Amino acid sequence: MKALLAIEWLKIKKYRTVWILTLLFAVLIISFNLLADSNVLSIGGGGPKGAKQSISIINSDYTFSSVWSNTGFWIKLFTGLLAVIIVILTTNEYQFRTNRQNVIDGWQRTQFFNAKWGLALSLSIIITVFNFVMGFSFAMINGSHIADIGLHAEKIFYVFLLTLNYFGLALTLSLFLKKTGMSVLIFLLYTYIIEFMLSQLLNHKVMENIGNFLPLQSSAELLNYPFPDMVKQMIPGEVLSDSVYIFASIGWIIIYYFSGRQKLLKGDW
Image 1: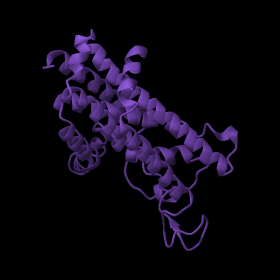
Image 2: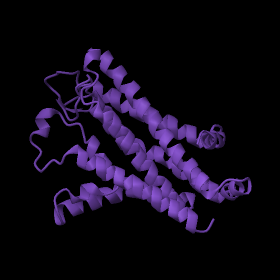
Image 3: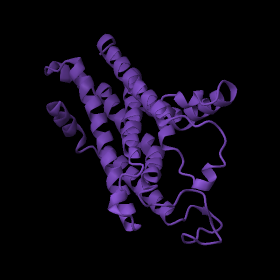
């Protein structure tokens, strides 16, 4: 796998689009966390923390008690943008026939497939580390005690699970469609519009919470909107255990892997 990842790195290290999307993702994540931490995202003027004239619409507590939930939410919001990298890199293999060249050079189809999954896994780990460093920095700046670092730290793992879920779907979709423009369009439409609408429809018309088990929504439920505590108490509805969504997310990732593998082994090359 190390050799496969080394080859993938050679393909992307000078690919400007990859670095532009990565930089855009990082800037957006840091910017929105700074805005939330500064209590700018509020109703009534966006004054400083504790100002009587403003009402916070998002949890602005960036100590260890809430920081992992806050940073994880913003990463969830923009991961679809970063997943476009996986789509572009995979579909480019078909567009420029480099997938066939890999086989000519001695690769097996499964090696090509595992290299792409290795890339998705590596990117998920990098984002998780980025989230940890960012969250730790915010918490320490806001006066947290290092002994409290473990508070709600499971959210760090949820970030890894969510990003791998997104990247797995992006990779699988790319293997089936093979066209860059179509894959990017369908992926973004599904990620930000279709699944949300379908989830709401299923929850209201079929059964409460059933829409939460759609592919991406199952992981998104682990990193919900960080409302202030008093607002959370006012939201009706049954709240399922995180473990339910963890198993659902892992189940979808397994489905992505084996359906994509089957497509690659049995389909046209």
